[in-house]
Length: 322
Image (cartoon, rainbow, N blue to C red):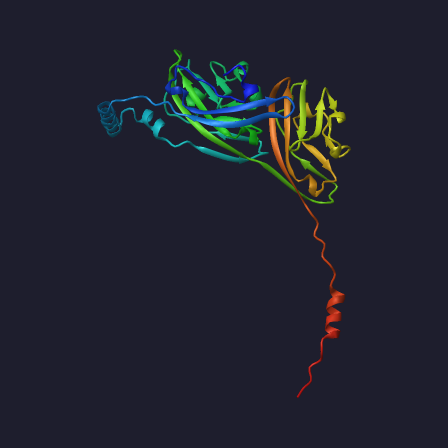
């Protein structure tokens, strides 16, 4: 990138020595310590390999022969299979990203689950390689025991939120680092929505995650542009709170230990409707995030028109019989 990128606004990225494996979606985002992670845009890169026409025709013939004869069918099926899609509501306890194989896997392979740019879970001679795992997924992922024997390489993700909506890739490497298998799974987590009537005593914006979060974590609830509630250093920080929310918010005690980061908003009114974000920071790293959309419905007042109807009947002219 250019040295004066922030001054000029030119955030272009130059990538050299392109390879086929570089194909994919690249996201440009800026992390602001005050407002969190801001996504600026996506760029789709496709690196094509040049093939002579005669070589393409030969490959097609070989593929047809192999499929017809049944040889290496499993390997070709990996490329022609559609990407599985999993969709769940934000707030479910867990979701499974499926991947099953009938291929016999040696004991010295490495299984790696990744989202677009972070390591989600790594298995290599030990089902829990936490040192390679990004903090966003710490204590939230699990793979089955004896996965190399059963061929079940599925990943369980606990406490998914809309922030986890992404394409996940499972790659199996040999001891030499060669790719043996690769599978993509698309996960969509629907945004949490809550409704309440204007005049209610309170409403809870739910957010549950893994227990025993780091003690130095900072929890921030924000609306579109204001700080709703801040918890840091073991206590609330009312001085950082916007005046609109003074004495109207509450979080649970020991929220880092229990993982219950839910926010209680007292006396909700129509003006409070909108999106709320809960951000959990550890130093400068965002480790948890969730959006909750709140809708406060206004009360409909029904006017008593009984007297008006009675008066209309009294004023209605009487009909005479001819």
